[in-house]
Amino acid sequence: NAGVMQNPRHLVRRRGQEARLRCSPMKGHSHVYWYRQLPEEGLKFMVYLQKENIIDESGMPKERFSAEFPKEGPSILRIQQVVRGDSAAYFCASSPPDGGGNTEAFFGQGTRLTVV
Amino acid sequence: GDSVTQMEGPVTLSEEAFLTINCTYTATGYPSLFWYVQYPGEGLQLLLKATKADDKGSNKGFEATYRKETTSFHLEKGSVQVSDSAVYFCALRNSGAGSYQLTFGKGTKLSVIP
Image 1: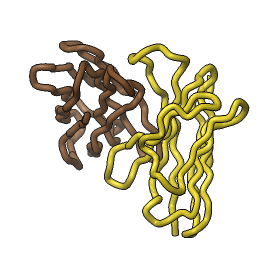
Image 2: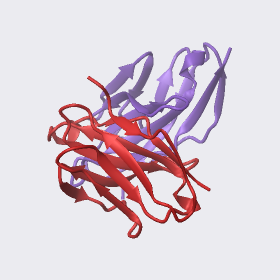
Image 3: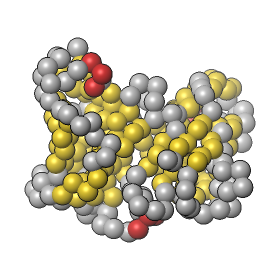
């Protein structure tokens, strides 16, 4: 059973370009979470999605950031018109259908975005 | 809101030394507590967890006890190895609304030298 797969592992974008980060959850998992880790910081929650639904996007910046988890295919975190401050590691986690508050989330290896 | 505070790093220890990484939390309700480990260039892996007061989580020689009275979840290991070199994150997940969200500390980098 493959773990949470994120790609690319490393992504370099120039200021103003778009960044697309992909996350395939573990088999059988229908919940996806995105976290951002800024340098020297802990991970911060961004968004929680279920298939075709955004459940909670309270941690997402209001502009330029969007996320989706379509019925088929991976979850996508999209950052438009990237700026240097977007440089960070973006982690995806997944969990199985609702098991209550004790359900463990499994993390991917992250995508390290560098904006030059 | 919920928060996690863990000791500043980096921490450098010799092999076989005793490790303590302090973690305290602020939360409403009855959170579950976690330690995650991030090896160089890798994602986060769950190291151990505790879901209620006085529970002890343990794995790979690491232990942490959920202390409600001191709102703490300190990570300990009796004898560290070079392979334990990593960044360790303390985290909580609350039991109320938004219980899927993990709140992380800033991380403590541990380097173990031979």
